[in-house]
Length: 606
Image 1 (spheres, rainbow, N blue to C red):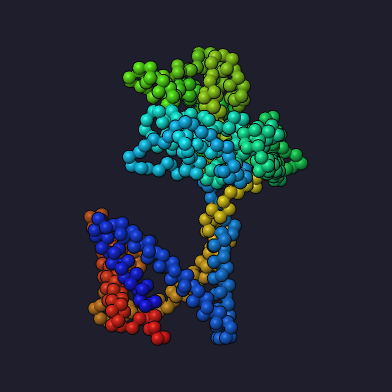
Image 2 (spheres, helix red, strand yellow):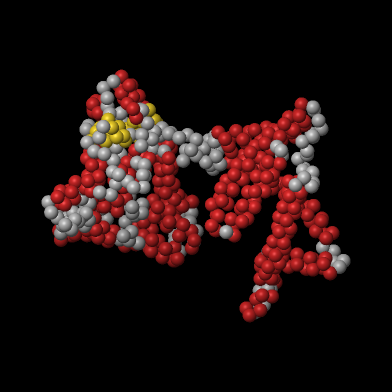
């Protein structure tokens, strides 16, 4: 029975899969059968691995011939298994980590509770409340209670739960009520993780504000003390920053550079990482050069090596004159000044409805666009023509000449930071020059070293970013992530062994093929001819031998004949073989299940 049940499961799953493939109405049955079959296969692999381990251990204990190979097999098996299961050296998956945030455990039951006099909306489909709020939302004595601080995502889920404006207004009121009075936006609460999270460093001022928003008890004090400890951890790396690297005064309390070490207090967010790597580094944008500047650049380059040939001069002139798109800056600023209307709250819509408005409009009227005036446009033109790189001064001057909203300032900064850097242009210039002529070593260093320095700085900042991060899910990464021990074992141990094995096997295949391809009869002659065509068609020699055949007779070319043979005859043969194998397996399985034949697993008496 213990051997018959697995065979029954396999047979039933196989028949269901076959039938569901042809009958879409029972496709779900096939999916369920596939799941059970996968479970059975997993158990079979586990039992098979255990049986293999037992056999090799017995070989070692009995000192049988070849027991050394058994020892190597066991060590390799257990080592690979542990490396894969424990994910040794695998970095966490980025999309599940909370970069720049520090967590401390804080149960939902310890969070403050907020209430409103209202009930849940009645739903005919009896749909339960959204999963994101089930642990925090409750109804008691005609009141709707929410424990903790509601997030924006939870608010959106609750808004979708009911369709009426009154319900949506209630959700907005409950959301406003549950927001912390003092640390809103600075400290978050994740109910799914039962944790408080702080972005950046928890300062003394923020500490007191957080304590005011939490219940007044010893547990809250301990959690805040732990946050202070974790957010004030210093992380340093040894690095040589770019010459123009500067740390803004607003961040000087957290980030410092001294004695060849860059130090940060607390975790680093992705936005802060990008600022350090790009904005603070002072890498200049690649602005188009004038004729005089191009001539000066060419002279400096030729002083470091041989003169450029005509093709190289053309490449240099073309790349250095290329406009990175600065002329589009006014359009970018004006586009940012055109703002859409903001959505109205449910409370505003309810007030309009109660006041007698019949046609409710869900958004406010769009504000008047803020466009550049003539003086501001002239200032931008002068800035572009002068080749200046002081974008901060440009923003200040534009503000003094007319209105400039925050969205436009952000657009200017984003546009400027998105321009190609001078180091990148030099690298592209070097590649272009090498394609059409030689460059000396000094010339190559002049063109490529700036890009290498920019890349090394980006890597160093990335290392500091990872070192300062407090991992939330250490086992979330891929078990075969590139560079970890499991990947190394596969790439540099298993793959070479497999390659060696197949290389040795090739000699046996060649020997067997030599004996099989002797043209003793018609079948062997056809096999020999087909194999010869396929072998030639897979090489450049076969293509070159018949390339002279006209296009209208291209089917006679060896490479085309190879494709035809593999697509038609080989596919048909493979299908026939697979059908025969499937019928044989089905026949053998039925014999075993019906007791006609003896199972390869043995009988119950064995």
